[in-house]
Length: 54
Image 1 (cartoon, helix red, strand yellow):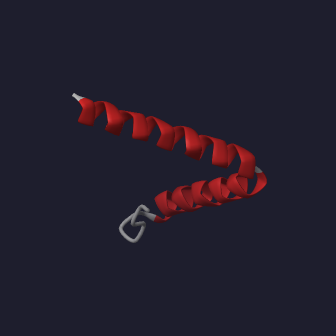
Image 2 (cartoon, one colour):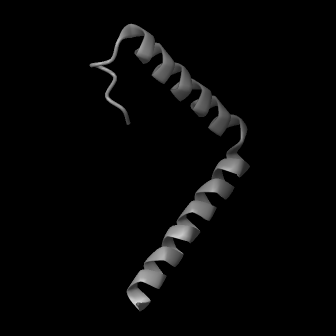
């Protein structure tokens, strides 16, 4: 998570607005969030397997 204590007020507002938007999106789209997460970790697992096989 980004440390917002050193940001200007305008930059803080942008970061907080993005966090709020993403929080609401994840609440409203739990299936999509799960799908994206599974896809990400599947790719990471494949990368690990490929890197250890070489």
